[in-house]
Image (cartoon, rainbow, N blue to C red; front, side):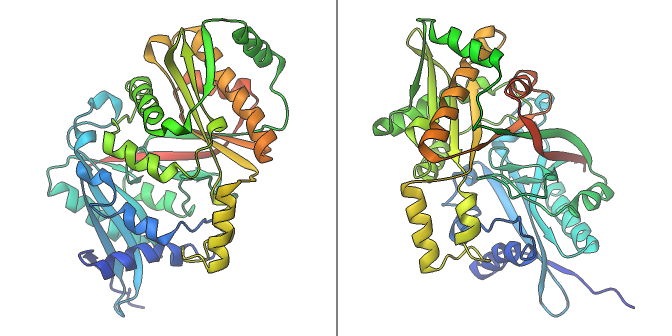
Length: 389
């Protein structure tokens, strides 16, 4: 039996972009743990002029079709000038391009799409590809290799387990593991953690405060400044631009609750922060329909939920302590205090019983140690792969 011919073409029109976005819903329709994101937001994510990522990045989307013209796969190749300027020893650096958002009905289709993305990068002088990256390291990096049996939390990726052997067969080697931890937040933390928190509460130099939503932009700027300092030596770090933080802050504003985002001050100076988000995916799984287009009832569900979220899971997507403190005991003390205060608020004010921390780099000893101390266990793992071009 002859193999079906696969035709891969670049996405150049709005119609093709719509087909490209829509295929993710088609490809994952049978997966009960796939959470359809809002279609309008997926379109905006890949639109220059919509997503400020494209102020410093170039991207080309590709569609794969069979001989009858049916869409059977997709991929996006991209080059980030911010990443190209980073030190090589931190994972990115000159010559490093990316692909992501892979969906394919079969291994031959996936191989063809990956080869197409590689060719696009190669012709633009890239010498190495890191993948999957959808789009930046701040969005959905890595391929899910553990935790397919439950839905992702808000702003986390979810891929079919079939992709791991396909990507590895295409010559890709893992370069970094990103871990997510889950924990029961309805229970108090172990005695050691409680003692550390109590000790911090007696320290007059320390103040843990909620963010002031009336000064949202100012608070966002404080968090960004701490984040860029705290993460600057981490593997994969790419600075977040002012326009990106403004865009993200606008997107997240409906989810941000004052008692779930905290800033730690030392002698009046902000030195650490912790951001926690109610898991929007819990309601999106029920409200967004199969194709990211909520019905009127779905929109009502989303609106009412955003007004007063009652949610099982809270996700901690970002946390940071200034580099000047990271080697000190104070760093972990501030972290434990913020985690405990947010745990209390999540349980009391939102009815939450489960927390998820991550992602966390597998070699981030400090954060992995904190996760273990609060009795968290790894529930998801994402792998980032690389290959020379």
